Length: 275
Length: 253
Image (cartoon, rainbow over all chains, first blue to last red; front, side, top):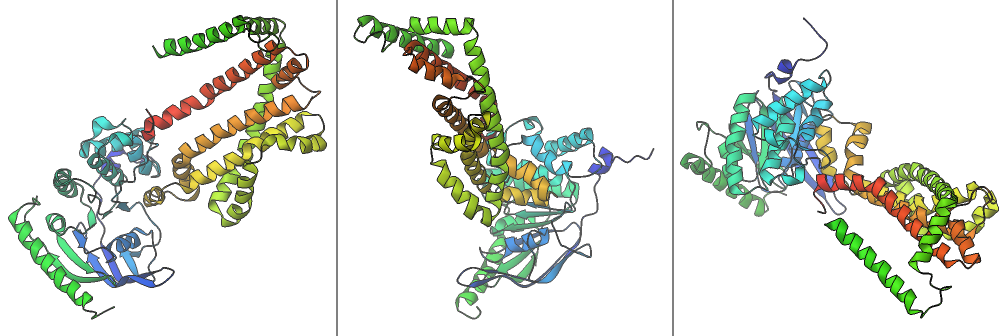
């Protein structure tokens, strides 16, 4: 029987991940003294369901690129196409995760996951709660649904943030150094979980980090960026089998190769070849 | 256990007080004994004058406080949001907050006469500034990342303001409201002691006439009632909100 309400099944259905195309995006910030070119003519393509990791030192514009794709900032020139449509404002199809989990302390764990779902039309209260429960179970925090945010550890907070981002069923997940502030052991667990969830939920993921090993461990492709001005330098496909282990020898080998390349690029910048 | 401890403390206080009176060092006229005060309170309760005065005072207080909130919260929002309001209303609020609200009484009497209006005006002047300041400070202290997170989840304009910015600022706003309440209470007592109003006989008046009649048992009794009312309202109005805030934000114990 057809109804107006979206069923829980539909809400949880694996939807087609997006294809992203960044075309000639330039973005600069003006401070009182000088102009900083955060992104200089950056172009980048992500296939449907691809896991791409941006690496580079601070100031290379990787977070800015993420914000532009999310729609939180507008490029000076160029455009971002998601499934062929230009990105204007933030939208539920692209969820952004931050280094700071940015959970709302006035809501409990479930309330945080429900926040985005409440903004989604056609879901009644019961369906929303079922969806929230589904994702809380996925990140292994079902029994913490009533917990206050301050009671959670850093890793648990990021899990809740992940559940919150996944709950509205976005096509794209944009992750801005989400594990940067966590301890090594928690991070390793989250690498495993994220790879699993990505395979189960089929999202296009753009992940930003300055940890090259993390990049190799997670990405189908690693995109190397360099600062002043922010540019895409080189891209490295990663053909290692999944799930990958951050301390695996193959991951380490490719990571050191990328690090060496990065070093060469940075030397060239430091030599004053460009400004 | 905690109740017992608190009770023991106040009981001890009463005993010291009674003991001091019994030494006879001060005259009864200057320092009535706790029993005198209790006897006065008993009389005042029995003839209904105390209940009537409390009612009049609470009504004035709630009215003035409500007006202060209704004006102060939106003004605080404007001050937080727009530079123009911050440079005008914000500066004025900062200045007037330091002015004890008793100073408004001469003007209030001139403008409103010996009416409820004058009372309300003084109470509003006592509360509004600290509410404006706390609200704008609270809204400005909301970490921008909350708003960004909400925006990526599809929250916009008014929805963001009501469901993100406002709750995020709640700890500050509650503090401001509590401070505003304390100021309102003080302003009203000052106004009632200072001004004889024909439209109602409040606690302040009761205290004032106690002084005129040199009935220190009445003065002390009314003071006690004022403290109790303040305490009860604090418990009833703010304690629950504060407990919620502490639990969710993980502040305090």
